[in-house]
Picture 1 (tube, helix red, strand yellow):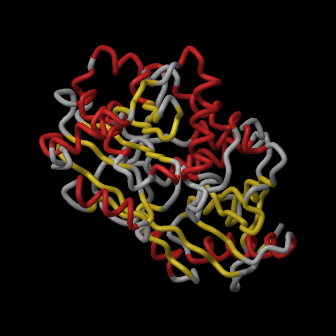
Picture 2: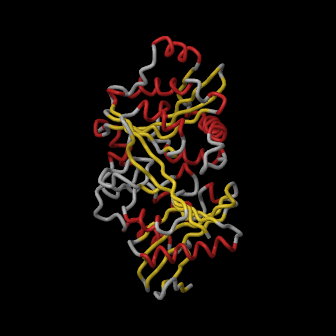
Picture 3: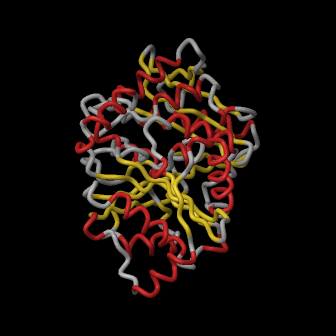
Length: 366
C-alpha cells in the first residue's frame, strides 16, 4: 500500500510471520551505539506479532512497517483491546527522526481508527500498562532499568507537535540509607500488628497469579490507562520471569487473612546486560555468580484495594521490602505514576529524595 502524507511516497507494509524479523531488526537498529538502552521488549513483541501472547486472543492486532523504497523508517503495532474499545493504540512505536515517517504512521492509524468508529489514537501505551506505559522524556543519559522504557529524545518532539493531549508520568529514586517514612514508633507498631505481609508461593503460581490479578483489577479500576486484566495474561507474564523471580519479589498484603494488596519488586537485572542485550539464561547465571553487579532494585508496582487505601496499610509493604533489601542494594527506583495521582506522588515525595525520570503519553485526535 502506497501512502503519500505530503509529497513523499512511502509504503505501508503489514507484518506477517515472514517479515517479523525485519520489524525487530529495525526496532533494534534505532539503538545501535546507544550505551543506555537494553533490549527488554523483543521477545514480547515477537509473541504479540505472531499472535501467541494471551493478550492477542479476541483482539485487533496489526503490525505495520513504513518503508521508503526498500528501507524501513518506522514501525508500530496498532491494536484495539476488547476492554478499551474506544482507543486505537500505537504500541511499540519506533521511528527514525523523520517527519514523513511519523506522519505516515499517524495518517494510517487515523484511517484504521475511523474504520472501527474510534476517535482517539494513543501513543505510549504498549497494549497494557503491564507491558509498558510512557515514552522516556528525561534522563536520556542514564541506563534503562528493567521494566522502564527507553527511547531517543526526538520521539517526544515528534509526538508532542502532533498530539492534542500530553500526559506526564514520573518515577522516584531513593538511596537505601534514606529508605524510611519517619513514622512514630507507636504508629508503626499499630500498622504492623494490624496487617500481615507474606511472600508469594510460586509453587502455586496459578493461584498466586489469580490473586495478583484480582487485586490489580480492584486497585487500579479508576486508573486512566488501566483496563481489567485476565488471570491467564498475568500468569503468562510471571512464567516469563519465573527463573529470575524469588518468592520475596511478590509480596501480598493481608488483613484478617484476606489479600488486600501487593508489591512487586525485583533487582534491576538490566545492570547485568550489555548494550542491546536481552534478558535470558546468561542473565540468570550472572545473577547467581556476580550478584554484587546489581546495586539497585525496582519497586515496579504497588496495589491496594480502595477500602484499604489511605489507612497506612501500604507502609507494611514498604517495611517488609526494606527488611528484605537493606544491606543488599544502594538504591531503589520506582515504576512510574501519573503526575495527577496525588496519593502516589505524595507518597513518593515523602519517601524518596525527589522526582526522578519523566515519561510521556500522547493522545492524538482522529
